Figure 1 (tube, rainbow, N blue to C red):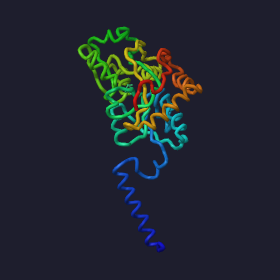
Figure 2 (figure 1 turned 120 degrees about the vertical axis):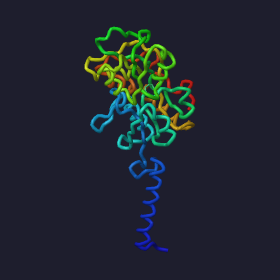
Figure 3 (figure 1 turned 90 degrees about the vertical axis):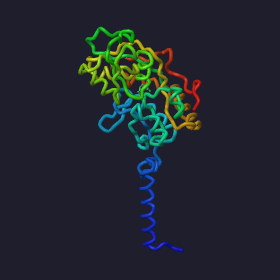
Figure 4 (figure 1 turned 45 degrees about the horizontal axis):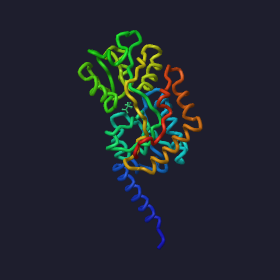
Length: 279
Ligand code: GLU
């Protein structure tokens, strides 16, 4: 049987209608835009890590993500960047909104209940950011009676609740940029999260904010993927190993921390991917 023009038109309409239904059900099936592409969750508001800058994306997480995507067979044009705020990362992976997340995303046992991780590809440490002229805070031991800002859904906020809840007043925001604004305006006395994130914010503040420089945790940055996708984890870990071995990792760290006082802790960096991590 041959298709008449009317039958063809009807078929096209049916396919389009099905695509529209699929689109409302799952972002993964949404339109041709995403077909054949890889969807990567990053931060959009963390200078030096994941930062949206007039339609382009820059930072260390972005560079690592591009390197991994290339090894997985995707060109830069085939990457769809999606904003992955701290609180939404597990849900985004569980819902299939993204294929992987590189967003200063610490590997934790709690998160491993919902998602899997490849990596680690970097090790940071939780630290404090204060106003330059404030000499009263020089470590977590000085937080008594202070107001502290961190981000909902982060390990940083969780650590404050666990370790310093009796001394400090915690204010939670959706992102670290909001915390930096609160610090500028005097609403809080300090911001807490990973040292490398704080270094980017301090640098963007043009000398108005300073990182205390006494990290009090270790944050192993992983590549978040759908729970149980062991095959993908192995491929990503191979890519990270290559990136470290061919010098691209070191270059990406240097490029993205340029102009800050930050240097990675060499006791933990570069890390060995897959070190004791299950996928
Ligand atoms: N690395 C920490 C975390 O994954 C803090 C940074 C962030 O919120 O992205 O929770």
